[in-house]
Amino acid sequence: MIALDLQPYSFVDNIGFNRLLEYLQPQYSLPSPSYFSRTAIPDMYDNVKQIIISHLKEAESGVIHFTSGIWMSNQTREYLTLTAHWVTFESSFRPQCEDYHCSALLNVSQIDCDYNGISIQKQLEYWWETWITSIGLQIGITVTDNQSIEKTLNEGDHSSVQCFSHTVNVIVNEAIKSQRMVQNLLSIARKICERVHRSAKAKEKLAELQKEYELPQHQLIQDVPSKWNTSFHMLERLIEQKRAIDEMSIECSFRELISCDQWEVMQSVCHALKPFEAASREMSTHMSTLSQVIPMIHILNRKIEMLFEETMGIDTMLKSLKEAMVSRLSSTLHDPRYIFATLLDPRYKTSLFTEEEAEQYKQDLIRELEIMSSTSDDDKPVSNGCDIGSPSTNSYGEDNLWSLMGDMKKTKDLKERAKLPEEMVLSYLEEEVLEHNCDPLTYWNFKKSSWPVLSKLAVRFLGCPPSIVPSERLFNTSNESNNFSQSRLMIEHFEKLIFLKVNLPLIYFQY
Image (cartoon, rainbow, N blue to C red; front, top):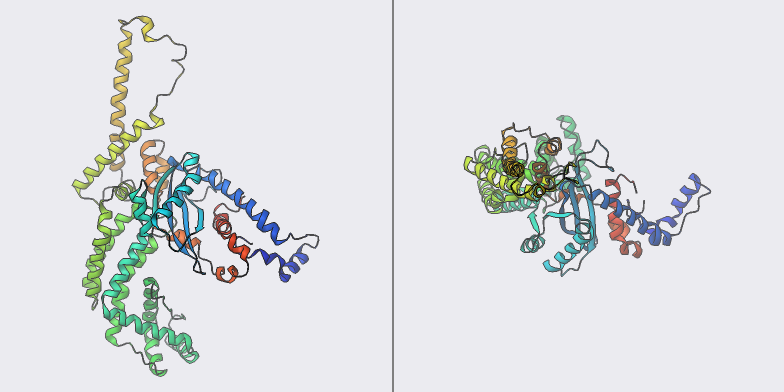
């Protein structure tokens, strides 16, 4: 309870909690707060850490990807976070019904307000050594929404990409700010929602009109101006309640009235933002992968072109969306990491590339497989017992004719191995593209016995998430600000407590 609910250690001294325990188990003697802070929580942390290390060792292909960012608590403390993401097909820990995507919070640490890229890199490298390289695993791609982290890692020896959801947020926010009419409309919408929330009379009238006009009994949504998706939901709700809003605004003498033209513009804004909101949700699920980024960019670009014909009064906003998509995401379309991920996703393959691009990327994939095959343990000859204690070729003499047979077999084996990567890629690409709702990892789990090297390469890319949003959700806790101030001990042990809060459900409380 202390870890999962982020309760202060002094919680065990609360009268109400003690009375409850006395009622449930009168014979039980509750330990002191110091026992939990010095023994129970540290021991639990060590146990959970070892379990997570065991989970990490089950990663397919031995590659671990990461999401990292700077998280600000409700008390304005800044923390550097590192969450691991990997793929496991066969696990001794996870239930069989679970999907193949795994994740765990590795570390969270408070940082100074004057941090820089170098200090962040050193901290991450220390964590990677502690958790990953020391147990023989490989560091994959780091996804982040922090430009300083991305720049520092890419300048070093680490692979890092920008969070797709963060990029979409920047694009949409810039577009909204580009057109004053849209900003004015949002200002009016906010004031109406705020007045309804503060006025008992307006609330009562809205509820009355909803019943009269048989509208959904929904409350209005107050947006957070810095979060465009909340503004989108605010406008959607107003449109849903349009008839009631118009009449209520007049009867309650609101100074802010929405004109017919403004309602039409509001519908256009919602129509334009809807695909971006859907894209953000799609790319922020637990099972989202890097392979979905290129397809989503193409979809959004196509939708923007259609919006010029389907909307009215927001051309400036649409032009900003179009320009920002090019300036911020066009390079992603030519990034080998995204290309390989898309190519190795059986839902897409080469379908989004031109014929020339598809041929080039296919050859790149074959070359990558050849490199992997030459260094893979799978391709090393396995002893069948005949070479143990058998006489060498030289024992028959240099001119023995049968020695030629061995040379011929070696030459044939080398030729067969050289063909194998190309044959695997061609066979894979010739198969039909899967439906979008299929899980690509299920496909590669099925194919790993037929194409082990190709499956291994696919998992390397498909195990990487495109967004840090799922990791961010892990840190959202409504009671943090209430409990932090109650105990200095709580603050000192916060890193261990948040580690347990996040990871205990992920390991099914088996520790």
